[in-house]
Image (cartoon, rainbow, N blue to C red):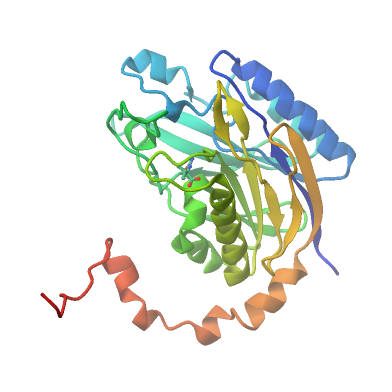
Length: 317
Ligand code: CDV
């Protein structure tokens, strides 16, 4: 029997500092309704989908920072989204900032959850690869303070069985998509589909590069990792100018062949959909990327033993 899952990437346009979480949820609910009406069973929303991309702002008052976080999920503002998902029998992925307590310590994570078509949370992920910096860079046009506002995720890269189709589903967040390790760890658990939300500024504050090249690197990362692990990837942006600061869109649904099955055309709220054939990944995972047959982990030890690159000493003075 063929296994298909019709899926959607629900790209969000800008959410400004002054916008409420309730208004963001309203927009997401409109897209979830549209996806359900088109027969989609799974909708992927962006990273930090409830608020503006707040790591661009330098803040020192903890109470001001914590306004962007959720102490529970569903939170009062997101509950209507969970209820609608249950009514429409649509599962979803949602990125948000998580405030929690572990071993008596307050922790803050850049988190995503997977909710099943019954509206229950089936899986949680906390972002591992946090980009950016800790200190204020006054000369930069905006900040990227993920390393300041979040702890490094402590749940690892897991997969979950979801839907009647028993899809092996994984999840990760934004910068994780640039690291092959993210996907290989899920690939080694037989992942068939990965949900991924992101917020990527159009401009690089660390070195000069044209915006088209940033979109190229996003697509290159998602397409290569889909192919090398034989998995579908649904990558969803928050896009457009938030209070004047641009973030590119280019949300994509990528097939296990690495080909783009659907791509957003705007930098606004936009739903893209595709009926994903799950058998497409099987032939890749059974042939060119048959891990059991071809991988040689005895030669990969450095990957877990070493963090930074250590070139051999130079031969010339
Ligand atoms: N939110 C992100 O993780 N953004 C990074 C930017 C800073 C490069 C990304 O990898 O898209």
